[in-house]
Length: 89
Image (cartoon, rainbow, N blue to C red; front, side, top):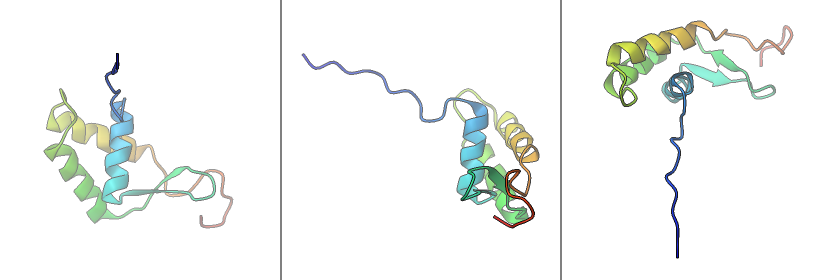
């Protein structure tokens, strides 16, 4: 008998969801050498990310809560990789 299991959601936390939305909108990128998220400082990409968060929040989350989480995560990400010295990664 073939048994199936329910699949876990691909994104398990609000922070993970926010990082995914920011990355998809182009507001953040990843340091290719170390993997740290970096803020691209693109105001248009930030606005796209906030619009996406408001239009498609996770199940059970209001659009305002989703946008607030997105802003919190974006505020916690710097524009440089902490492991790269003075070089631009």
